[in-house]
Length: 301
Ligand SMILES: C[S@@+](CC[C@H](N)C(=O)[O-])C[C@H]1O[C@@H](n2cnc3c(N)ncnc32)[C@H](O)[C@@H]1O
Image (cartoon, rainbow, N blue to C red; front, side):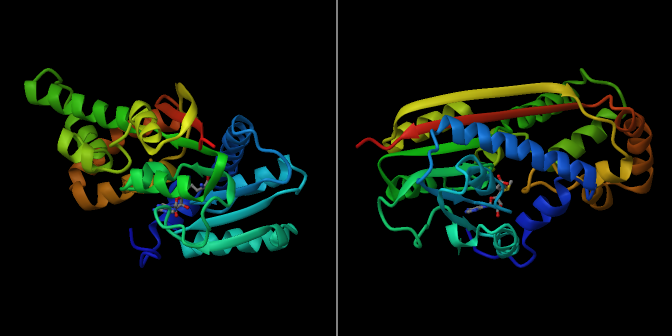
């Protein structure tokens, strides 16, 4: 994985495409991320005085929650591949008086050269491993930097079901079992964001792994005392204006709907697609499915 990609797609997604540029939505997302981080850190048994590695820290939300849970009695090593997100995290730490407790490093999760062996109490990744191609290498690196008895803490989105749903729709259309004329357009939207065949699924970092694959990889790395929780929330999405909706992408490796409509649909298809979907989006009749796996494990020692 190259560091500092030219247009920093990670920062583009976190700061714009995740919430379609909508401020209220971005605040709600940050609250949800903070709640996930607190849950994960509690599962990992975070205590004051710990040394925490926030790997793929983004804006640093997990670190700020950790510092607040320990009343500031913590040292944190924050790292990320996105220079822009790392700069934001550093600026926030200065603003909030956390700077003396934090170290910032531009580093890939598979090469944490800034961290010595056995130097970390908790190695946390929230919504990071899902996007790493070489997941075993990232887990080996977490293992290396953890002290014996230290804990790995993961909270990761699981996208495989979205890919399988797109594959199912493709299959139904191929068999002629789905006849609504808008379904082929819906499939082109979903297939641009999620792989629809087994080979592309295996090659797609975000969709190659479900919660049981993650469990297997963690155990193969050598971790023990593994605790895994799969949280599934299937609920109606809040009503959303169309411009915000199309500006969003479901994960950092996927194009936004606006990009898909612009690049892959002709004018007539765009009109038909919008006519079918916009009323559902704007009246909150779409589903918002969320699947998150929490996994905590110990490096034996
Ligand atoms: C969805 S964001 C999550 C950010 C943060 N962990 C949080 O909870 O808010 C994914 C983060 O993973 C980072 N990332 C992606 N691939 C990475 C890699 N190979 N190594 C380290 N960080 C990576 C991105 O730059 C981005 O900050």
